[in-house]
Length: 282
Image 1 (spheres, rainbow, N blue to C red):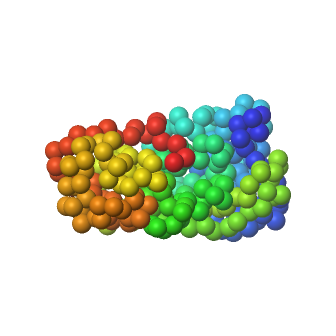
Image 2: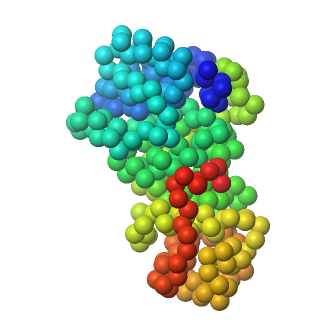
Image 3: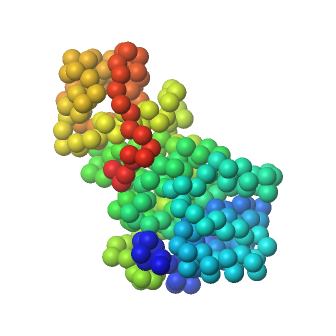
């Protein structure tokens, strides 16, 4: 059932109204909903938008949603694991079904796979009008965190590389059934992110490099970089990027991290970039 898969359903009608207001749904929109659950938000989206594509993995919930889809002409159900969905094909279908309309994503994301889901969406951010996600408040604060703060880390850099994340709502546990043990937030993420300002030819490899930089947050960046190259070479990267040799990764801006990556990429060094399947809630 839904709880087995980590879902918490937004059953409070007043809070559903606040979330819908924050989404600013337009009549020409196509919405992709991740984790449609019992269809409470699906119904609200379908009343306002041109098209709704809902993704739900759980068979009993999908059975209920199938009945809803049969009675709702602008709603299509995809019974699938969100981590295996072909988003490129789905976005293309949305574009063809509503030419000229916006495409947006909404989801109340299972807390244990929040980061993998976001990492699947981030590379598509430029073609989306927005990504709206209800997630654990602690993770939301990491998405929006600035350098030199406790919350700032790899996930902050990844989110801000592709989008401009902001916390739109803070939602109490009592708005959900079953209530989670934590407070939740609705986060709005719209492109372009800060990464658009820098010369990053391969975003995936850059973010793999950044993840290595944050591998051990209490260590100096130079020590983390030694997992990729000898100390002298890593120090040369920092020098070329005009980064303090004693700095920790969480003290550096995205611009500084991009400069270090460019220095590494042009030095002829080889290193293993993280693969998408390795990304977690770091």
